[in-house]
Length: 399
Image 1 (cartoon, rainbow, N blue to C red):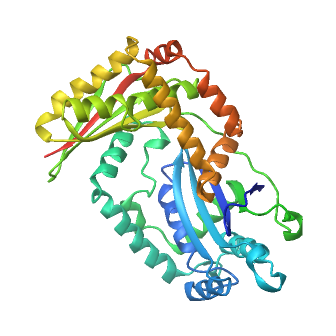
Image 2: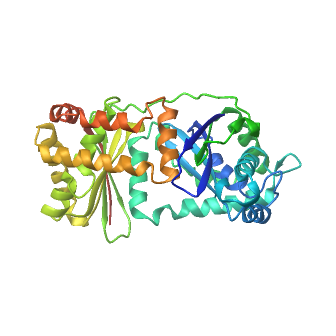
Image 3: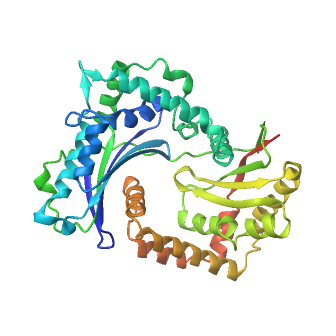
C-alpha cells in the first residue's frame, strides 16, 4: 500500500482516502461496482450500517463515503472518511488513528457469514445497482456522453459502463462476489491518502500493511480513419450532440491548452461561435480526457439544428488547424488553466484527485512546474497539435 500525507492547514477536518486501482474488464465491471456498496453495509468490527453510523457519530459526526471511476483502461474504487483534525479535539484524542483503523476495517476486513458476504446485504445492493443502471437515461447529458464513449472505445476497456451490465446482476451470488473481492484486494494497486494538518502524524504507529502492488497502465491509442456517426432516438425536448476527438499520446500540456481555447469557459471558440454567434446550442463546451487521448465536445441543441451545429463545430477545429487563434485567446486560456490550478488546493478531494492521478502515472506532481510549462506554450505549438487531432465519433441523441 502506498501511503502519502498531503499537508495543509486550510481545513478543520482531515480526509482519509483509500483508492483501489485495478484493470477494467468486462468480466469484473459489475462485480466491482457492487463490492463497495456491500462493504459499506458492515465490517468485522461494525457488523451493520447502524453500528457504522453510531461509531461515526461518536467520532464527532465523521462521514464515510464510496465512489467508483474509470481512469484510462483502469477502474478505481474509492473509500473516504472525513473527521475533525486532532487539534480541535479535547483530551488529546487521536481521531486520525480511529479514522484510519475504521477505513481499513471497512475495506479490508468485511463482515462475513460462513465465509462469504451476508446474503441479505448482497441481495439488497444488487437491487440498488439495478436501479442505478436503469436510471442512467434520466440525465440525458451524462447518458449521451457515456454512449459516445461506449461507441468511441468499443474495442477498449474504457468503453465499458462503470456500473457494469444489468443482465449479469441476477447471477451474482454472495460466494462469487466474495471470491471477486479477494481477487480485487490481492491484485489492486492501493493508495492511502491523508489530507489535512498532519505534519506530526506518524504513520508507522498505525501498523498499516505497506506492501506495494503495481498494475500496468496503458493509454488507449486509437486510429480511426473515418468519422463514425451514431444516432439514437428518445423522447426528449433538447438534442444532445457529443463529438469525440482523438488526440496524440504526448504533449498533454499543449493539448490541455488547445482544449481550453476550443471549449472551456465563456471565451472559448465553441461557446462564442456555436452558442453565442450562431445561436445553435443551449450549451457548448469540451473536456480533455488525457488518460484516454480524447477530447469530448458536448452540446445541447434543437434537434433540427444538428447539421448546422456539426458544420460550425468542424469549422472551429479547422480554424485551429489553420492557425486562426488570437493571442488574446491563448492568454485567456492560460489564465483559465491557472485559475483551475489554484482550485486544487481549495478542497481535500481536489488535492487527492490531482496527486493520485499524477502518482498513478509516475508524473511530476509540482503544480508550479506544470504552470510554467503551460506558460511556455506558443501559438505554433498549438497549431502543430491541432493538425494531429481528428474526429473519431459523432453521437447524436434526438427524437
